Amino acid sequence: MKLPYLEYAAPADVTEALGLLGELQDEASVLAGGQSLIPLLALRLARPALLIDINGLRELSRLSLTDGWLAIGAMTREYVAEESLAVAESVPLLAAALPLIGHEAIRSRGTIGGSLAHADPAAELPAVALALDAEFVVRSRDGDRIIPAVEWFDGYLATSRRPDELLVEVRFPTARPGTGVAFLEVARRHGDFAIVGLAASLTLTGGQITDARLAFAGVSDIPVRAAEAENLLVGERPSRNLFEEAAVRATARLNPPADLHGSAEYRKKVAATLVRRGLQAAADNADERS
Image: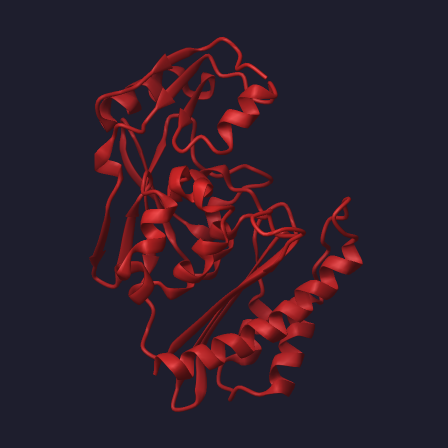
């Protein structure tokens, strides 16, 4: 299917891109990797007056470690982050999730910022960002604004970014010593969006859990944090019984959607299984990393 008629702009720098967004706002769409936007355009589910192509903005394609944070430019390709030693060592949960995004061809074009701006609740990166309390740096002609992950996701395929703002950077806190991670998901086929996914992180100090993070993908219109289960885990030692109880608490209030891929009951059972397996895998990974 052919794309609809629209105007096209390829700004030379971020300032020019912000000027276009400030003028047109909701009438403009930003093109990054295009893995989500181009199909939406072809299906006439998106009809912007102007397409702003930011692929030439090299200033948005970088990774840097500063003061306990890994800052990733919004235009950083997923495969670049996947191959990055800095990502693997400093944000292992992100490194664990990246290989599960689509296929290699998808990751060669898809961007970190594009996935998080699209905010598909079944995608991997939103769950990782929420689990790790990532920060989103958005920029407008008025300056920068930092949005915590808990405030970023604002409904199905919606974020708290204003129409005149551009996502320029995502910041992930670096993992503490003794942290183990796991990203697990169930999908119909490799490369499909997850029916249910789980981002899990445990930090062990002297054999005791001192930090726990759990976030689901595919169980609501936004990624979901399992705070009650996290609170249960902190201060305890890893065990099968503890992880069983954590699975109960993590899924007690879930009300997943039902569709052709699975019923709400099925998704809830899968979520519980992923919690048990994910926590054990994260605990094992913490031992290995130690």
